[in-house]
Image (cartoon, rainbow, N blue to C red; front, top):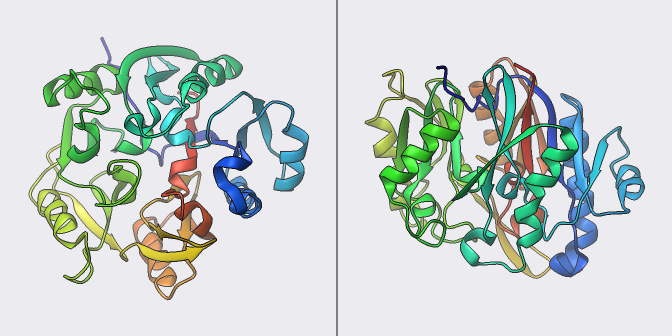
Length: 332
């Protein structure tokens, strides 16, 4: 029997799913800025594919006006707006799409409340009329990257952290990935970033860009806090193969860029991009490294148009463009 399989992000999409910023109290004085930033990201993605926004109840018209572009909306209560973390992960199974509903526990119990976010997959899948496959395993979508051929990359720092799945070890999680996502091989990188609120999501430091090709964050100078961690990740990537036995081509993005606004520091991670239909949307920091990041993306995605969008406000909440998006694959 053919296994169900999570397609790669560069495979064809029906739409891009995003969750609109929910509560002003979470963002404080940056609330207006984050809505403007989301709207800019929505407009960029909508150049390549339809966008479906999960929005707070009663806010559809206001959000559509802010985006100033044609979008569909699904109204649902939410605690926060990181849909890559809390939303469904889509797979192909027996000639149809299924949404795998992993549990969401507020990034390892770091944020409360998170009960509405734990329900957002169920509500969204019901609205989209897509079959739901539930599991008790905790996993955020930003913690994994796949090549659509059975290879998955994750960080030990995040996925093996006991604050997600206290009673599941490495072999247990690999078995879950095989059953639910069609994974044949897991490449475990030791580390995500030292700082941050996700315990080291992979999409801050490494993503698949094509079968046999990854984009990673450059180690940068030896005085950087994450230098040795990223160097250790690089060593693993250089010495491993994917599920088809291929060595990996490794391209490097510039190191994450520190930004300061609204009295807070954050880091823009260039690796936290979204791959759309025929396009790639890259977060920008407004620094001299932006152009290098865009050039690397153009090299990695020669058949895509690369677009940069400022994502400085997202960065002060340890997020980026990939963190707020989730691809809805096209019908198989």
